[in-house]
Image (cartoon, rainbow, N blue to C red; front, side, top):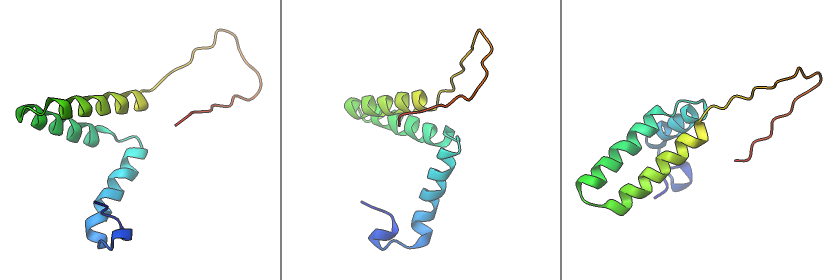
Length: 87
C-alpha cells in the first residue's frame, strides 16, 4: 500500500519514509541494512525460508550497490576523466 501523498496520507505518516530515503542516498545505508537483517531473522524464526532468502539477496544487492571502489592508475594522466555509472 502506498504511504505517499498520492494516497492522501498525512505528512506525519510519510515524512519519516522520505527522510530515510534521503539518508540512504546520502550514503547512510546502515539503518536499512539493519532493518533487512531483522526482517530476515524474523522470517527464519517463522520458518519462512524463501522470504529470508529473498531478503538475503536484497541485502547482498544493497551491499554491492554501495560498495566503494578504487581505481589505481599506473601512469599519470593529463586531461579530464568522466565516470559513468549504470543504475
